[in-house]
Length: 387
Image 1 (spheres, rainbow, N blue to C red):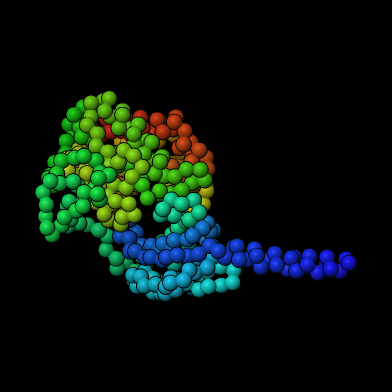
Image 2: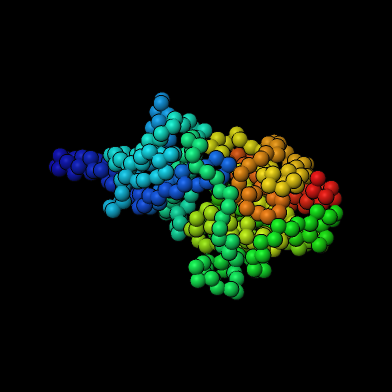
C-alpha cells in the first residue's frame, strides 16, 4: 500500500517547480515606448516598459560599452508586443526584446560607448496606479552631441485657459483644468527687483504630480514631498504680503495625465509667465542609484543677470536649515529655467534615495525648515535687488 501513496507524492513534488515557474512567468511586458528627452542638462533617450506586475530590473554593460542589457527576471513578453523598437539613432541604434526561460532581456545597441554613469534604470508605479502593475524606465544619455536642447517653444498657450479660440491651436478645457486660474498669456518679460517681499508675485512650482510620481524612495514619493514643502512656502509668503501663484496645489498633472515632458514643463512656465511673476522657484527632491549620495543643490541658468543671485541667496539659507551635505549652486539647462521669463531656480532639497535624508524629508520639522529658509532666501534676494 505504501508505494501507492509514494507515487502521487513524487508526482506532486515534481509539479511544484512547474507550478512555481508558471506563476512567476505570469508577469508580462504589455507595451514598450521610447522618447527623446532634450529638456534636461544632458539629452537622453527614455524607454518605458509597462509591466503587469512587480519586477526588479538588472543592468549589464559589455566591456566595449556598446551593448546594454536590462534583464527583467520572471517576466515574459505579452502577445502583440513588438520585440523590435525604433528610437533616436544618435543615441540608440537598436532595441530588441528577447524572451528567455528565466525572464526577458531588453537589449540596446548604442553607436557611442556608454558607462554606468550614462544610464539610469528605475521603476515607477503603473500608469493606472494599480498596485499590481509597474513601469520600468531606462534612460540612456546622448553621447553624440547631436541632440539640441530646447530653447524655444512656439505654442505659448499650452497650459493656459484662454477665452479666445484659435482654430489652428485650440486646447480642450479638460487638458488645462488642473492648472491654476490665471490671466491669459501676455508674453511680458518684466519682473520686479525692488526690496521687500510685500507686493511681489512669486511662482512656486512643486515638482512632478499626478501620474508623474517623480523619484521614489523606500517609503515616499517625490511629488508628495515637493507639494508639502511648497504649500508651506506659499503660506509663509502670503503672510509676508506676497502674491503666490502655485503651478499645482493638489496631486495632479499641470497639463494633463500621462502628458509629454515638454507639454507638462511648458505649462508650468506658462503659468509663471502669464502671471508676470517676479521669480520662479521650482522645488524637487533628488535621487541616485546608490544610497550614499546626498545633499542639497540649487540650479540656475544665466538667461537674466539675476538668476544666479536668486539661486545663491536661497541656497545659502537652505544650508542653514539642514544637516544635509552642501552640493553647491550649479548652472543647468533645465527646461523650466530656460522657458520662464523671470529669474528662476530649481532646488534639489536632498536625496529620496538616501534613507536618512528621506526620513528627514518626511518630517514636518524639516519641511518647515526648508520652507522658512526658501522664504528667507527670497527676502535676501529682493533686499539686495537681485544682485
